[in-house]
Every structure is written in structure tokens, then in C-alpha cells.
Amino acid sequence: MKALFGLVPAAALLALALPADAAPDGATVFARCAACHTRTGAGVPGAYPPLGADFRALAAKSAGRRYLALAVIKGLSGPITVEGKPYRGVMPAQVLDDATTAAVLNHVGTQIAKTGPAFKPFTDKEVAGHRASGSGLSAADVAKLHAGVGGK
Ligand code: HEC
Image (cartoon, rainbow, N blue to C red):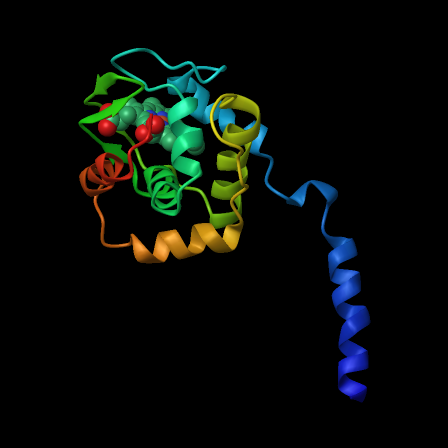
């Protein structure tokens, strides 16, 4: 018990020592997504899909959430159809840790994708689970998941 009491203040100090901006900022990370998907997430028809209604529809289903997380983690190599338009591009894997992946997905779900069902935020734990379950998948395998989850 005595040892435990000793640990608590140490943990509290550690938390205080972390800079306030240590939590990943989804808006900052989104700048790299915007290079292709555009700043508003509207995308470029036929080249870069919009991050909008399809994103929110997918995020409302557990299989869709896995697809979204894995698209960012593993990359994506279609064909996929998003909002009625075909895409046959390649999205490179984004090298982000679990918390940062969750932060950028949450930024998209709340600030970029404005239509569709209510958005439930990703946690870093959920992203870690998808990363583990999808570790053997290629970018082309991830794209195949899209058809199965019926986005918009
Ligand atoms: C180099 C360009 C590029 C960058 C950077 C990029 N993407 Fe993509 N993204 C694409 C392309 C291209 C596709 C479609 C791939 C295909 O045609 O199979 C795509 C598809 C997606 C999809 C699937 C959309 C759907 O409705 O099925 C999501 C989600 C996504 N990107 C999110 C992101 C996020 C979040 C980031 C930033 C962390 C990001 N992308 C960065 C090019 C990019």
C-alpha cells in the first residue's frame, strides 16, 4: 500500500509535466489529407473521393469504421465507388500512431463530413484493434472491404 501511495503523486507529476499540446490535433494532421482530399473535403471527382456522406455512413457501422481506420493505416487501392462516382486511385498508407489516427478521423467526422448519420468518435483503443485485426491486409484488400459495408 505504501508503495502505491508513492506512485500516485509521481503519476500526477508526470501528467503535469506533459505539455498541454501533447494530444494530437486532428485539424493539424488533416492538412496532409487536404493535399489530396482538399481543404473542405470535397475531393476531386474521379481522383480523390470526398470525405462526406460516405464517410459518415461508414462510420455509423462497425465494419465501416474498421474500413475507415484501415484506409488511413494501410492505404487504399480501389476500385471503389463513393457517392456514385468510381475511384481507381491509390491512397498511400498514412504513418500515424493510434491516437493521431483517431484524432484525424474524428476531425473528419465532426468538421469535414457534415452530412449523414450522427458521428461517434473513434478512440485510440478502437483504432489499435482495427490495426491489429487488419495487419495482414494490403491496400487493395482494404478497398475490397468498401463494397461489403455499403457506404454512400
Ligand atoms: C496522396 C493523396 C492522399 C492523401 C495524402 C490522403 N488520401 Fe485519402 N484517399 C486518396 C485516394 C486516391 C483515395 C481513393 C483510393 C481509391 O481510389 O481506391 C482515398 C480514399 C480515402 C478514404 C475512403 C473514402 C470512402 O468514402 O471510401 C478515406 C476515409 C480517406 N481517403 C481518408 C484520408 C485521410 C483521413 C487522410 C489524411 C490522414 C488521407 N485520406 C490522405 C488519396 C489521399
